[in-house]
Image 1 (cartoon, one colour):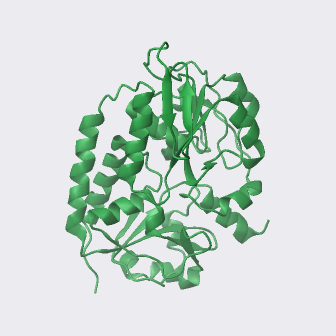
Image 2: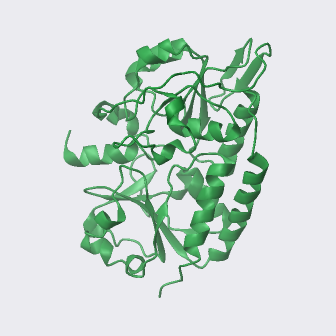
Length: 338
């Protein structure tokens, strides 16, 4: 496939919920999966207890005992981990090229889980079967489509164990975290540290209201394009807007409604006091974006009001407390630009 298409797929493979991801799945690149012993306990639930949970597809799951051998997409695994659930396997970006942990893995100890795939369209079905899982958990950006479960292997994966999907698109972070909390409780999670983290998240959320005078633009940089995200489709940005932030909404979004693609020559399409940039591994780093003349000349960039955006913070109170506290600290350094 052409360079621009591959670059666009690179954004999709880490971004929240983009319909084009399905048609671009065939462009997935290779990568090595983490190999680890699947000996971690999934939860402290009593094995004799029956289990039911209705996921966001409206699918009612029922098993004679609480699932303990859980495999999860890395974002879902990070959320569950913070509630006290310990998956035995993960798939999706969890390991960087140097072998260290990908930030998307949150607090997951990747040395204690089996990696089934590290990049888009990579999922080791044979390894998955060998783990003898009794539940697979993933977020959904498109209703009914489990994130990072390859289309080509979906039917086989669905036959191995029940699957649970948690919807992200069009919801606030608070809603999504609440759903992961419900799932974690049903799995017998310990909930250790959750009340304290929830209080931190609520305090940081209240602080965001003091920055209503700042116009904020959220972007992700690629080799050939700058993507401007569309706030209503992203739980973290919906949370920011609900808290009072003035976030730029692109005037025209691409098919699917998730973002607007701009050429780097048109990077000055929108005015903003603050620019938050995507920190995920596939996105351009600030020093790379600054090589683009139009971007470098933006008032927010020239004023040094370019700050990180943790685009896939774990959907847990711990994950969002940290994310929002860092955002508040950065916004305190900014001021409106005339």
